[in-house]
Length: 156
Image 1 (tube, rainbow, N blue to C red):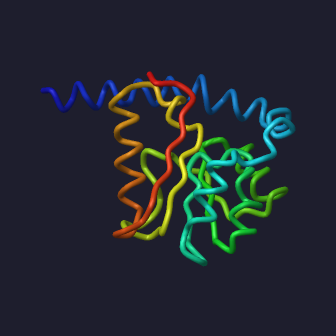
Image 2 (cartoon, rainbow, N blue to C red):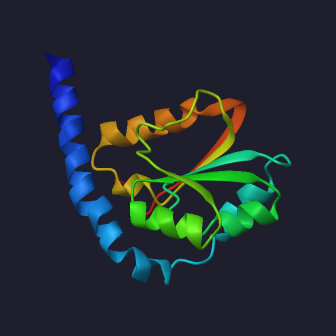
Image 3 (cartoon, rainbow, N blue to C red):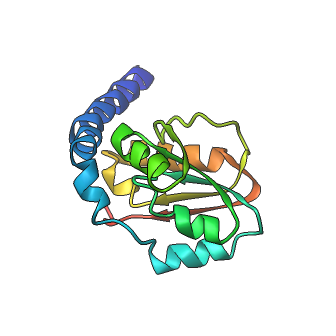
């Protein structure tokens, strides 16, 4: 059936991402952390424009480089990334509340966040259908009227 083929394609994509993204970031987390230390200006503008004391999901949080901007704006942020090594840095060095998890299957209730950030994540997702699932999953966790911001390096 088509559903079984879709599930197999999605599973193959997950394994590809595990091998070529997750394991790579786990291996280079410490070095990568030294090169990623400042939020991008448009992301900071988005964060500053959120209602006061927003609950923000930082999906694909990496080393938690957005934590200072979120904290400075008075928001509560929870970071999620599938690289356990980067999550460890985000929690330990950036002071971010974090969870190791898959942005395509988030461990959060529907409508639980005021905002969600997905910065430099989509280009790591291996197929259109998996990227679509990431967007749908991100929108699922936003409350009605919540805001999401997606940033990607590549069009395809």
